[in-house]
Image (cartoon, rainbow, N blue to C red):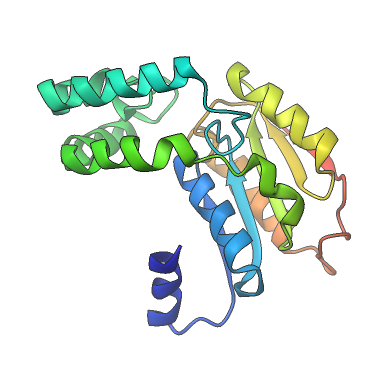
Amino acid sequence: MKAIDEVRERLQIDRWHICGQSFGAALTLRYALTYPKRVLAQIFTNANGALRADWTRINDQRNRASIEDIRRNGHAAMRRMIYHPCHAKRFPPDVRDILSKDADATDAAGIILLLEQATPVLSVRERLGDLRPPTLLINGRWENQFQPARNWLSETHPHIVIIDIEGGHSINIERPQEFDAAVIHFLSAPERGPASQSGTQWQAK
C-alpha cells in the first residue's frame, strides 16, 4: 500500500479516484481501507480473491501446485493458468495478443512471490464494513464463480454500489463502452458520498 501511495505523492495528487480489476481490485480495496482520506472514490471489478470467504486447504493445495509448476516450467506453466490472457475468448484479438505478450514477459519469480505471499492473504471480505470512500463494483454477470460473492456484497454491504453488465471476468476489456459509461455515471453523481447511492443497482446491456 505504501508503494501505491508513493505513486500518488510523486504525481503530486492530494486525493484521487482509483480503479482495480481482479487481483488489482484487492490492492485498491486494501489501499482505500488503509488511506481512506486520500481516495475520492473507487471502482473495482470481479475479484474472487478479494472477496473470498476463507483460504481453504484446497485453495492452498492448488496454489502450491501452481507455484511448483511455474518453478519447473516457467512461462509455459503460466500459460496454463486460466487467467492468462491467451485464454480470453471475448477479448478483441489485438488486445488479447498484446496482453499475452506482456504476460509472457512477466518475471516468473515475481509471479511466484505473489502467489506465495499475497494470494493467501488477499481477501478484504472481513474489513469491508470499515470502507469509507464511495465504492462501485462493476460486475461481469457471466462469471458464475463470482456471483455468490456479488450477491453477498449486495446483501451485506448495501453502501457499495453495484452495476451488472453482460460479460465475464474482465468486463473492462470485454465491454469497454458499457464499463466506461458506468464509471462516468458513478463519478458524475452530483452529491456522491457513502450514503448518496446506498443500495443503488442498475444493469447495463
